[in-house]
Image (cartoon, rainbow, N blue to C red; front, top):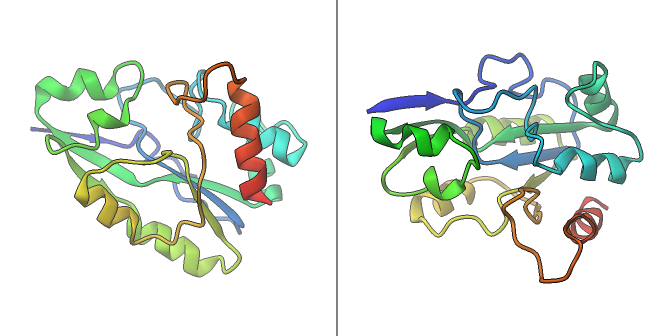
Length: 184
């Protein structure tokens, strides 16, 4: 068995230390996978383009003023999973391209959660709105029980490249409408 930790675990901003009004909670970003500067940093993910449109300012994890803009707009991110333990044969599926949640939220992988950290952030930030970005989420009983420990204000449509939208609809515009309604 092998444990794969969250790739931002040693990053000083793994847990937002500034005042936040908005907390985006994703699933997991594995070490050994595509390196990113911050949550939702993969090129195929449209989170920061959506957030930039909502807040009217370019908020890009590859820019030097990124953390300053998160602080200005009181935005934070964290993933629900801090590490996974799996059979070594499963590692390429977890750290490979695509980052499918079905590869980490199943009965073959053991997960360590950030639930206590998220709940502490909620206590420390009384105006906090918590958003999940995993769409409808998993039907796995353990996942549902763990995610129910958090007071999620709204489930956002997934910003993932793999997320589906109705046929013939512009994906960005469709997801943006959902997010704008829920952020306001």
